[in-house]
Length: 499
Image 1 (cartoon, rainbow, N blue to C red):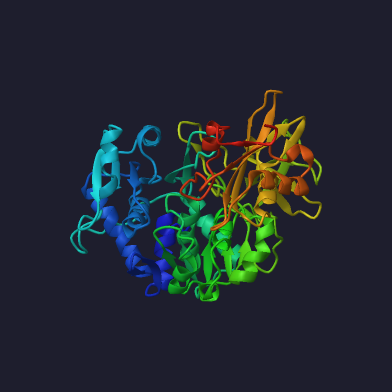
Image 2: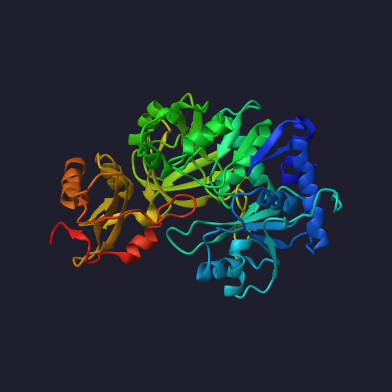
């Protein structure tokens, strides 16, 4: 069986690490051998319910064992799993279902009504207490794995849609296998590790954590959701040696009151893409965890990365073996080192990248892919993230990085989190607007925020508009939904530096 497919990865892991614990979720523990059996029996149950190879199976499920069973069972059968964001409803859910056209939808009891609200025409199967996707053990046949090819689509994952409508990404089997190999190597994972993630299983980060564990024979503990107040307690209970956070989670964890739980865990490194450079050292000093940054996306793989023993705060890392990366201008011509431009990437790892978006032609596996990320490459090959291309603010002829404005805001002692974004200017181009969340028990003065920025930023980048808010609108993976902030724009409650 080809090990660059999900069934091959599951089968090989069971053969080498059969009785080792692979998975812990909701108090359920599964060995590698039991995980292989669960994949085969879930595939059998799906087949008995009328699912066939090539069918799409959508889910509206939170982090629970049934979702993992469906992901692995669909791959085992040769079906395509479409794990949807559990926050979707109404128009956005209808968009995802219309784009992916799944034959089946597995949904949690409390979310089942949403399928009717959007007039979903396929088969709805409710997953809840006493109604798992497969009957009790032994009640269904265990299928042999399908003869999948590495380039066959295993999953359709929808992008977060922070800058536009969500798009369904066709992810092949081998992409997950390469994620497992590449990230396991970057994090220096071994069979002795316990990986702890609370990130949602409908996105690449958490799904690839399963592949990382299978690659080396490690154990993975999947939590239901992120809780800043209980994060380290939960990591300690899991006996985690490696954790997974997103950049937006770092200031949230640092904003929590210090306590003995900060170091009551064995974790010493973690994957932390998008970690603000100014917070990297404080995170390691307080929690004892070295965060390893990198560049990867739903459409690509771990193209750029570092290792725990060699990290630079604020840098994503260097290009990894098997990949190429360039920084280009608007005409797609390479720019000199030290110059901002869009990151474009390609790979010679077979089927390590997605094959494209739903409704679009299949991409050449070795083609250059545009990322939409504005970066800088230093002369020594280290890459620094600047901004999303669409998040760049242009004011008075100057390009302003929202990332840099946010870094300045986070250095304010009373700011817990911040987002910078453009709003229209009467003078054409943009004005800089920010939304800031105060630390617990603190009161933020908008004028003081602007004065602080004036000390940290060039005059053209100092925010004109400041909104003090209780929280920022986030996706399920912790990314700020800047489209929501831009649409809301300046209101009667907004402080105006020029007002």
